[in-house]
Length: 261
Image 1 (tube, rainbow, N blue to C red):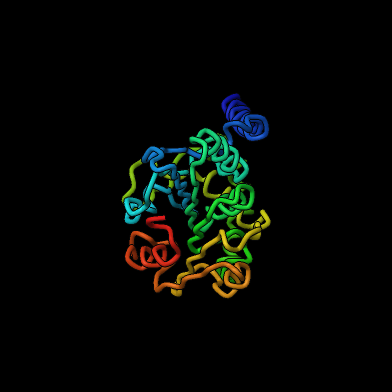
Image 2 (spheres, rainbow, N blue to C red):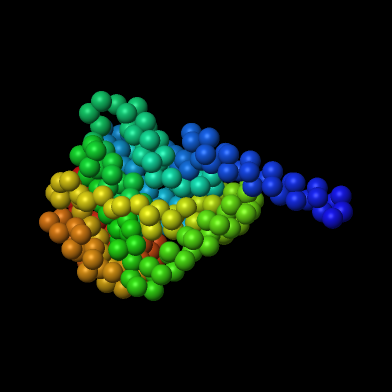
């Protein structure tokens, strides 16, 4: 084996091992969200918006965000992976810094309900769950198989790529480059759907659910059973596509009491 080949193998090994060490050790950075304050707290109200898989909160809610009363914070995904516990930690830290007595609300889309439901249970904040997907049990059969397969293959590929897995390579349509996704974040999201248990609502009165009749990814019967006791509104729209069906989602959220609360 030539010197160049040996050097290449050593560099690849260092790339993989150093990245694995970062994931294991740098827990304060790995999987954290990008918190963006869109509007400061007003009238002692703050709404946190969390997007779903392959989405960013500010873009996903663009058509309805100005209907929301009070302050707004977008909880966006970073390219340094996705870890729900880190999202919870950062949101709770931000929440504690709000003025005392602030009424906090969460709007979570699809995967974002993993974080939203956990925090709602912990704080008794109201959660508006849009097309909630908190585990493979919520997916329809084809998507369930695709999610598990992508998780297994993708995690192995992330290890093999090392630091390259953090490079933003997946462009979100009509989004700025800052919203591009890394393979690390994308596969982490699939793995979280596959591996993490879904948190049941501790108080059904605090979780309000929107279901889309044309949802191409989820099993709505499972969602209705899981959220039994919660207020549920059905609309004619596709999965989490607020910007393509703004009036349908707006009407549902008005009915559930988000706007003007």
